[in-house]
Image (cartoon, each protein chain N blue to C red):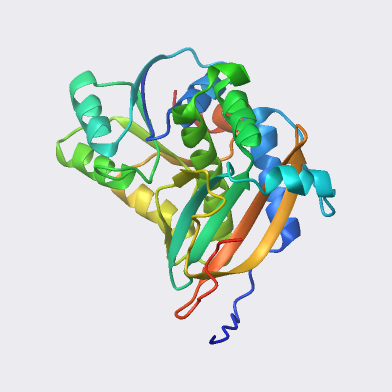
Length: 169
Length: 118
């Protein structure tokens, strides 16, 4: 595998946590905290086949993807909070819209920290993402946060010509 | 106030409308989900203000604004977008936008920006 070394300074996990905290404060009137050392039980709940991933792609003089990943339950909590509905009242359309928009807002802020000469794609959302995410990119920065007992992972992947590890984990 | 809110995300339109209300603005709102619909609404409905996302399918926000101005409309137009580089701000201003609000925003942001115009 060809190695890939980026010389560009990328946002730190602290930057990510700060951006996500702002989104939660502004749109959910809620506090989300970094969870640097999730318990085995939390990880087991997170690493299931029903994960939901929302992402935006960044292209330009730096190219990659910003992913927001959470459990199905976490995604429903996000949708319920943003739509101001009960968790039983949100369906897949609301979940996809909400998780995609979180990725879009976080991705816009992250893109602004990386380069002005980039553009952002429309958000995309995948349900049951445990097995199918493959991005042709390498993971650069990841932060895990805890909200309503659910892990929410925000990660930045840099596109590379010969990545053969993909994004599947 | 009659307002058009253009965003391809349903939840973001809800958040924008909720935040306007929290900021104290009472508006009759028409929601549209792409840039072409924003253009049509701006021309046909002649609202007091168009609040538009930048990145949308079927005409982006900036394409929509340029089409609105090309059609001779001087409707007050502002962006509400997750991206905000200096280049985008300059592009927005050159196309005739009055302001650009960055997501995430608060009621205070809306009050500070919009009170100068409406």
